[in-house]
Image (cartoon, rainbow, N blue to C red; front, side):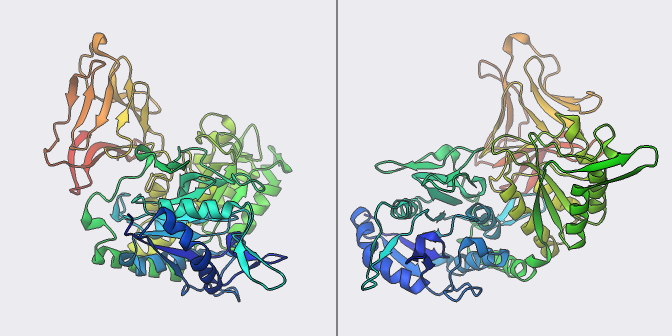
Length: 531
């Protein structure tokens, strides 16, 4: 029998619209209808569950005080997060009802607004309870035009999604999720991929967290781990207060750090190699948005990260190249995503994208453009609060902080702990790689020259390879043979446990490259492998 308490925040959207044409219900009207029509059904499945429908969170832009998500703005993300933090101790889980149009943006914004990370990218205030966003393609309630009485609408996804979200909110999953069409997905991984079917959202680059058949099944291996210690959990009043203090600053300043998405598309350009002149539509548009005050630009490139430079043979002579270089010089942070739904950005694969790092474009691995926009906007704003430099923000953008992207430079003992044969870690600027070589074992190499900088095995035995490099949760980094025998170890393990990362940081270009084991449960480097 459930004895949990769940809060339902209604921000607006299709799920809480009624009438013909559809119009938003107020939070109070939706709460009254839900208590009458929905709660009795929920109690059939979850006896003892307490569901509270929040009615004191107004969105000031709208007369109904709820918003179609089309009109949701970044300060509204802060309102939602602020309400959750202010009432964090009162509830065991949260359901956020939301329009579908910008749900994939909110799915990333909320986890970053409900957390605090250090300059090194480790949580210092971490979510410990489920926050489940849902909505629908069809409204929850039908309003009789004759007497205005409400009843559950016929054949809707609204009821199914709501029931699934309420079940997921009781799961204890310590992250922000989206529940839609029987699927539980990580909030910062979703994209809206269908405008007219119930199966409206997908998670192209990350597996599902759960599915609802007869009951809700959670894929535990795909779920983020809980806070590494209570001392960084939002359950601690002081930690929650720290998150609220950051959020207060973010809400007051986030509009000063606008970020926009910018699609690659076929557009005119021209250049004259003799005179050195160039121009183009993309360059003109980039210059215009920089002049308008944007602080971040999320490129939605073609394919693996290719973007028109404005000069196919000499990218630096192209107008787009020069416009992006000017943007970087003026302090705009550029992130090079792909407009393709699935896959990882690899701008070095083609010459058509290999020029982008030269103008300062950052690589987001497999992060969605929506996640990149919300993450970048929040990090740029938070930089003023924490005193972060531009280089710190650039590093944080490229690090997996809350499960929003593939981790390319770290092994984490609690999430991605293994480096299998043929796999590698890459420094954020691509200047070095740590490869689990099938014939040599772990080898750190300089990217440009291929020079070996460090290796685990002085004399590899082909009979024992290939092997696996494992960052263990006791803090020990171990290379195991094909027969599961330890061939090499950092000897940093402790019996009581030490949640740790293997970190490839810095760059060969300025001599800052480092390879080390960092115990983030204890806040200390336990082993430096290079230099």
